[in-house]
Length: 141
Image 1 (cartoon, rainbow, N blue to C red):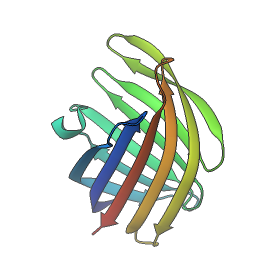
Image 2: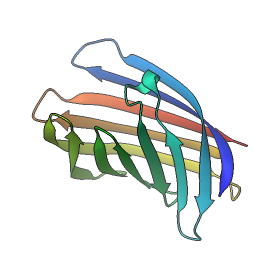
Image 3: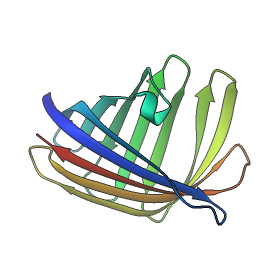
Image 4: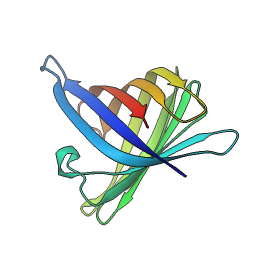
């Protein structure tokens, strides 16, 4: 596994609200298995998920899988451009269904694991109002 730095910027909005923007810069590790790129990092208080470990798995093209596990939360979410997927998000308060509709997945990743990932999707969480989400990840050595 190789060490990487990850700058993760996210924006989330519902209805006509102004986007809520978060940014996290963290150390992570990268591994290429020959078919997929794996990025693993620890969440922080900034993301509201301190104590969780997140792994992003991508084919480097139009698919990203996000796996999150920790003391109170766990989830596995599939993002495939142009597709909708259902997922379960488990919290200390119970399990909630997620409906994910992925509109854009762009991966520009080099063999050494550096590069950028851009993801846009909408999410309905437990039947609540749909949110629109953008995620940009810049990976450097």
